[in-house]
Each structure stands twice: as C-alpha cells, then as structure tokens.
Amino acid sequence: MILYLDRAEVPDLEEISPEVIRYCVRKAEQANGRYQRLDRYYRGEHDIFRRAAGEEELRVAANYAKYVVDIALGYYLGEGVKYDANPRHNAGLRGGREIDLSPLLGCYDRQHIRRADLEIGKSMGVMGDCLELCYASGGEDPEPRSARIDPRNGILVCDTTVEHNKLFALIWDRRETVAGAPYYFVTRYTDRTARDYRSGDLVTAAFSPVGPAREHYFGAVPVIAYENNAERQGDFEQILSLIDAYDELLSSRLTDKRKFVDALLVFFGMTLAPGEEEKLSRERFIDGAPLDARAEYIQKTFDEAGVQVLADALVREMHKMTLTVDMSDEHFAGNASGQALKLKLLTMDLLVKNKMRQMERGLKERLALYNHWLCVKGVMEPVGVEDVDVVFTVNLPINEAERVELVTRLRGMVDDQTLLGQLWFIQDPAEAARNLECQRREQAGTAGDACSKDTDPGRAESIGPDRKEEIR
Image (cartoon, rainbow, N blue to C red; front, side, top):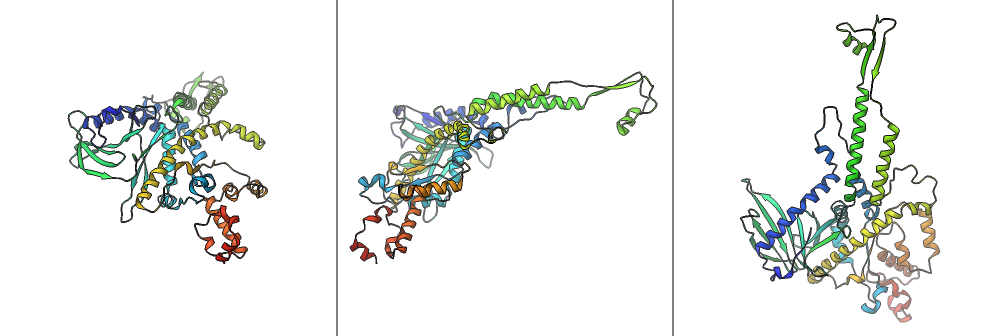
C-alpha cells in the first residue's frame, strides 16, 4: 500500500521512531481487508460460498474476476517489454555516442525479468496497486534483482507535498517462532540503508532494531509503487456486485434444474401395493393398473429463455464496465473486416494504454535504480531515463505477410532500427540493426573491427576513405 505522512513526523529517516513504524503497520493491517477480498475473488472464493445453503441448493460461481484480469494482462504483457536506447534522440547530449544498455539488460535477462513484470501486472489488476523491491543478489558477484511485494506486506511512505516524494518503505509480515509465539518482522528502506526491526505485538511491545543498518547503493528508496489507475482500483473491483448477481442467478438456475429432475410422481385412480415402489424405481414398469388410472409428474415450471436473457445482460454489463472484450461472443469476429475488429477492440486498447502509462513510470524508475547500482559497481555509465524508450507490444494476431510487405516498402524512408522493431520475431532492434550493418560491410569487403559490439550503425555513412583503409 501507499501511505502519506507529514515530513515533520520523521525528522531523521535513518532513525525512525518505533511509534511511526507501529502506526504504519497498523494502517496496513486495516487496509488488508479490501486486499483480501479482491484476492479471494480472483482465486474463485466468492461470497456466495460463504452463505449457508439449503440441503437441495447448489452454490456455483463463474470467475469473471480472473477472466477480466488475465485477458487484459495477456493483451499488453503477453509479449515482453523492450527497452530501446536510440542514439539519434540524444546525439546532441551524448556527443553522438551510442548508449550501451547491455549490462543492465543482462541483469534483466539473467533473472527472467518478464516473470516479475507479469506478477506485478497481475497484482495491479487484482488489487489496484503493487510494490517492487530492488535488492542485490548474494554470492561473490552480486547483481541487482527485483521481487514483487504483495501490497498486503509492503508500505511505501511518501510525504504530503504535491510531488509525494518518497520518505521510506517498510516490508513487513507476521511470523512465528518454533515455540509458537507470534511476532512482527519489519525491514525499513531509506535512500541509503536498510535495517530490520522486530516487535511482539502492535499494542504493548515496541519495534526494536535487529542488527546494524546495511548500505544498498541504489541511490534512492529501492521500493517502486505501481498503480493500476488513479483510484488504485482493481480491474474487476467495480463489478463485484454484478459478479455476485451472476453467481446467484447461476446457482438458482442449477438448483431449479435439480428440483425439476426430482419431480413428484402422482397416481390418479390407483394406489401402489407395499413393495411396488421399489419395483417401480428399479424396473420402471408397473403391471395391473386400472384402465381409468393415470400417472403424472408434478414439476416446477420456469421461463428458461427469460433467465438466459438476464444472464446475457449481466455478462454484457460486466464486459462493458471493465472495458474488456468477450472473446467467446459468436458475433465478435464473424466476417468483420480488420478495421471493424479494431473498433471492437477500442475499449480494450483504452484500458491497456492507461495500464502501460502507469507501468512505464515504474519500469523507468527500476531502470534508474539498476543504473545507479551498476554505476557504483563500475560496469556501466550513467543513463538518463529520458534516453530510454519503454516499448510495449500488444499481443494480437498479426498478418505476417502484410507486416513484412509494409517493412519492405518503407525501406529507405525509415531507419533500419525502427523498421526492425516492427518485426514480431526481433527481440532487440538495436542489436539487429548493428548485425545488419556488419553484414553489409562484410559484403562490401570492409569487415573488421568495425563489426564490434560498439559499432554505431547511425555513423556508417560518415566513415571517410582514410578510415575505410584503417578498417581494411
């Protein structure tokens, strides 16, 4: 969660009072009720299962909460996020030198950062916000790493100014000793250090420091907040009542079906002798009935078509309120043109573009923290977040032949790196552009150290005759 606190309450961030920590943890526990309910609905534990049911009543739930979150998550994070440092954007600031992101991207690749991105995106969709902790891995050669922090166990404390600058962060949970004694364990992060605290409870016991403070070398509070929207609401939070109504309707419908099957059999003009009930149930046949006797079932009648209309209306409202598309709708695609399909996906595009903007801010903050840590280590030069583009790829079926034809036709009008970025199988457009330039030079007989990793493809045309001789 994100908590706002007056800066005067914490005059020394490195020596935070136990009362402040206790206040923050107590606020987090109070807010966890909402998070718990949203998480329950995503996992399919709806409120309908918490109500007492009769002997013949059925309780079922359609998990539209999970559907709404997962379909939006796969739409904008099904393909991994790309990071493009384009030297043309900052040639004036960097003197034409290409920005090398390989040390940072190497850290991303080795820890499978896409998995962390998916976990963060899912938490944003379910609970409305999420936290990420940046830390240094163990071992002889540590590297910066990222971990998703459940908003129920993380607190980012910001000041009350309009900029909401970070003050500190707390990662906390309730633990238990081997003797069964519960206690609170909190790790406090500032812009310089991390330190552990422990307390027996939130009423009588105070938070006492455990061990000394530790430098983390990220240059800022290493906890990043991701917000799903300005209201910090989950994707399905506004349709919880519709989900409950649909679950109730579905359960009542199935209960009525069960009662329909268990209809009463009534005999007119005759009675069954002792023992004939079991025979009738077993053999489905009765002999010796009078000529004027008859048997009928007494069953409940209900309007199946009317119930289905109500169910369809609830489903439509859920998709409309969440801006998601019902992919199972038989009228969704049909024989519609590509432009018509784009119009049908317009609401989904509006939803995910807002998510992309919210997530891009956090990803750039992560990039700055990693860059500072790697600069301190001496394996990377400083890079401004404005010099790196965070590129999301919408996960939609594409016409591969049409995409290749478009790229081919634009050759000569658009630079190679931009064109290569339009191809779905290119993971790193900058590297692909360098490889393409090397291939061209090899074919022209000018290969050599010009095909090294530091070659700037944008300077290929500026190499003069003297330099070409050196390359040869």
